[in-house]
Length: 264
Image (cartoon, rainbow, N blue to C red; front, side):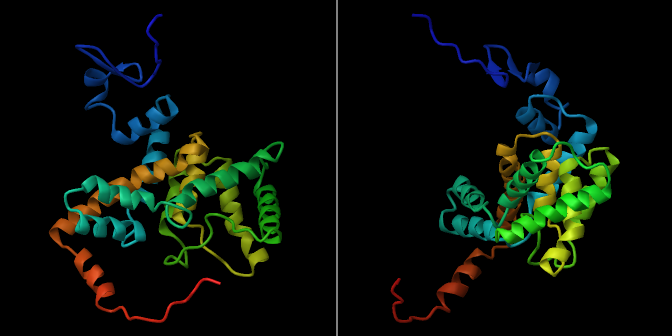
C-alpha cells in the first residue's frame, strides 16, 4: 500500500527549505511579513490588503489587555503557584475566555451574521439599518435574550475602543454590514430597553472581524491570540512588580468560616 499523503497549504519542510502558504519562509516571509498580517493570512489563506491588515491589527490591539480582568489575575496566580510553568499560567488565562470576557467577540460576530443571513439584502440607508436593528432588539427582548456587545462594567459612557475601530474601518473602506448593523443597534436599543448601553470593544471587534470575511468559528481564537500578548505582558510585569501573592493573601487572611449551605 502507498504511504498516505496529508495535504496542507500551510507549513511544510524539506531538508533545505521551509515553505509557508506557498512561499519560502526564510526568504519571502521572515522580516517581510508582519505578525498580524501573517495571522490573517494563515486563517484566511489569502494575503490581506493593507487596509484589512490595519483593521485586523487594530482588533488585536483592542483585545490584548484590559487591566486586572479575571484572565489576567488567574494567569498571575497560576504563575505564583507554578513559576516553572509559564505555559500553564498562559493557558489558565486563555481558558477564562468565555461569554463574559473575550468570548463576546465571537458571540457578537455570530449574532450579527445570523441576523444578516435572514434578510434578502442589506439595507440601503441608515433608516433601513435602524429598522432592522429595532426589529432585532425587540425580538431579543421578547425572547428574554441579551444582545451581545451591549454594555460594559467600566466604560458606561462609551468604550473608547469602539469609536476608534469604527473610524479605522471607515478610513479603510471596510465598514461592512456587520459594523453597520452593530452601529444601528447602538442607536436604537434605548427605545426598547429604556436605557442606553455602550457598544463594547469586544463586540465591535467581532463585527469588524466578521466584515473582514474571517471564519466565524475562529473569532474567539483571534481574541485569544490578542490576549496571549497581553498575558505575556502581565507575567512580565509580575516578574518586576509582583502582586499575585498580595491577591492570594488578601483572600486567605480575610476569609471566615460559616455554616454549610446545602444545595436544595
